[in-house]
Structure formats: structure tokens, C-alpha cells
Amino acid sequence: MESFTDWLQAELDRRGWSRSEAARRGDISPSMFNKVLGEFANPGLDFLIGVSRAFGIPREEVFRRAGVLPPIIEDDSEVEAFMAEWRQLSIEDRIATYHLVKGLNQARRDREKARASNRAISPTTEPVRP
Image 1 (cartoon, helix red, strand yellow):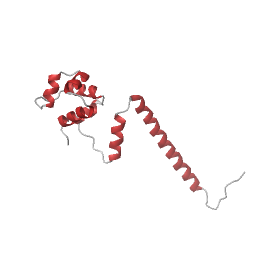
Image 2 (tube, helix red, strand yellow):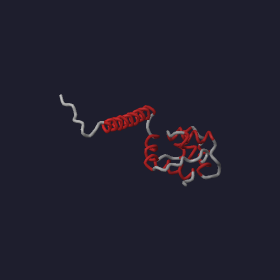
Image 3 (cartoon, one colour):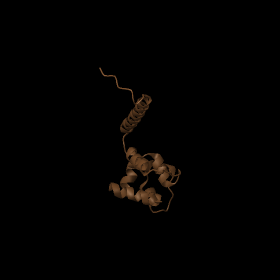
Image 4 (cartoon, one colour):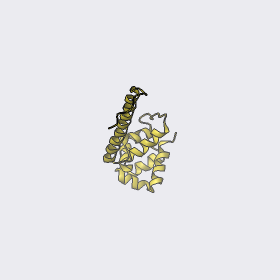
């Protein structure tokens, strides 16, 4: 598993940010940011919250990356991929996505119910035509 400092550095690289830029965005002391990345200090709660704020990602994800919370064990890589995309959405888009998925599941249940009721009709029964 990737270490917290490796993940943190990869996030900085991916965003093209300096350590001081991330510290500024997260309201973290630049010297503390350097100490954590240099593995001279362990990240505290305030530091982790600042990283969450700087990167705009949920605290829970940062806490899991830092080992404060246990990792989520997923058997399905598709679920992991979906959740990674979902976490990047705004709250409004998360709500819309929830309603979309809920609607898709309701449509599936309705189709299954319709199929079940069609099976209940005898195969020799002719449909009624107007």
C-alpha cells in the first residue's frame, strides 16, 4: 500500500502544486507541511483536515490514506472506480447522481415485476386486441 507521504507528494505532482501552495490552500504551516513530507513529523488531525481542505477531497479519504481510519475493503474494482469519480463531484452533482441511480434501480425493479406478471399469464393466452 502506498504511504501517506508518497500519496501526498503524488497529489502535489498531479496538481502541479508546490508544497507552499498546498499549505496555503489548506491553512497549514509550510514548515509543518515540509516536516510531514520529509517524514520528520507525523501528520496530526489539523494537518489532515488542512490537506482535505487544500485538495477538496473528503476528510475520510485523507484519514484513510494517513492510516487514521482503516481502509475500505472492496471486492469490486468497478465500485472503487465509481466511488473515486463520485468523490470528485460537487454536493449537488452527488445528489443528482444518487437520484439517477435510484431511478435506474426502480426502473429495473419495474421491469422485473412486469416480466414476472407476464409469466403468470398462460402461454396459450392470446393478447386482447382492440
